[in-house]
Amino acid sequence: MRRAALFPIAIALALASCNTRAPAPAASGSQTGSPSVRPSATATKKPTHVVSARQALYVFQSSIWLYDVKTNKARQLTQGGTVSMPKWIDANHFSFVQSGNTLRIVDLKSSTTTDVFTAPGGIQAYGWSPDGGTVAYIETDSSSYPHLRYRSISDGATQSVATLARAPGRGVSQFDDVRIQYTSGGAYVLVVYTPADGDSSVPPDQSQFQVRGADGSLAFSVAMSREPTMGLFSRDGKTVYFMDSGGVRAWTASSGSTRTLRKINWFDPWQSPDGSKIAFDSGDFSTTVRVRVLDLRALTVVTVSKPGRARPVFAGPHSLWAQVVTPCPGACDGPVFGAVFLIDTVTKAERALPMQSLQDVDVFYS
Image (tube, rainbow, N blue to C red; front, side):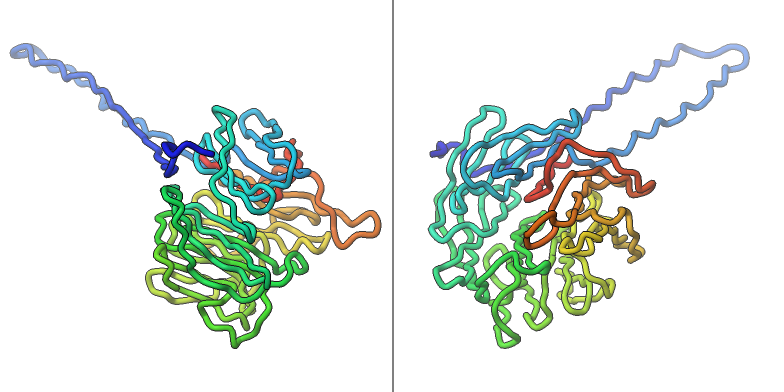
């Protein structure tokens, strides 16, 4: 078990800068003759730091792999068993689910792995609070009802927050989505668990798409008759973007209002590091799927890939990772995922990467 001294997990990033200035020369009495004229110094503008992907975790052939952007190499981190949902905690730690029900933490520096807790009904989705002190997760019961819970890492105290509409099956529709995401400030938790078994009679607090406060209170939900899915919080934590029967929509936390951005369908949405764009695909159940980008300021949509590219992930301001989708070669249920490419969103040029998959991918930006 992990030593108690390691809990809670605190994610602290300290940035310090020093500016050393040479003292001005002292006056040396009166001057004779014409004073010399010195050209004024031209201020040197500090280059703007561009946030880009540094490392990525993903699942391939029942193992977790790490891709290092700088070295352009991928290496295997786990072996054996069933693993899923790797998530960065900080630059040296990540968590994942082992055997479908046990949350574990890996220390990359010491190469050690520690169990956090086990959920008897399985961990279907989870997310860390920004301070690392709480895990929000979904556990299902024997009747396929999903239960949202908050678990304190320091003492193991667990709060039962909500029971969602019954969800008897997964992965049978391209509208299927599972997500638990805290806002950057930790005030809200986005809960997505679709598709669900139910109709418009399902009460708001059991909706398959809802936002909860850190205390568990219901802040927002979408009626199941609108078939809400594919949601994510904005980088600043002020807006939830999602798709329903009316198109791509946005809910603003401060006002509680909802508006339609575009009357389109999107799948696998991923926001850019600066929060100005969202990449998505047109549905990976088709081999003609393409990657597109929505500009959140202009509300314009552009196609940035050739056919057969899906699961987009922003690697930088003008670059995306995407995975190839090819026809099934034999008797199978759908398309097959292949190589991963880096796509320049300006020139549309592609370059193959050593990543083998974008399944359960999570990116550490810096």
